[in-house]
Length: 79
Ligand SMILES: [Zn+2]
Image (cartoon, rainbow, N blue to C red; front, side, top):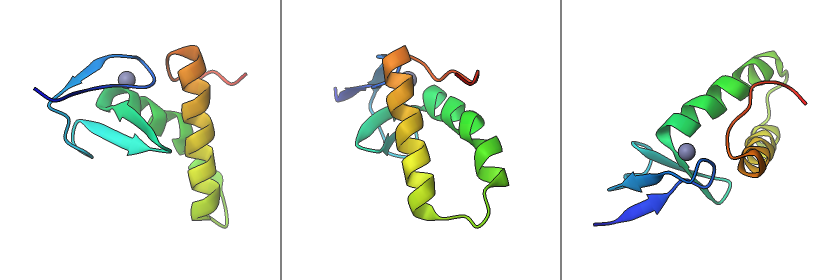
């Protein structure tokens, strides 16, 4: 059976299907629960960003993921 490991929480993702039970973002594999936390984490920042730019968004996503990988989780509390 094909499996993937979430780069953030290290959980095994069984039968991974892209954009359904895992997400490939910023060259990382992210499980669905972590993706939900990522969205919750960046949503307030994204909402207030004007004008919105996709480059800025990609960078925000990438930085948030790299930070989460170091911590082993998405942490909503700002450093
Ligand atoms: Zn995960």
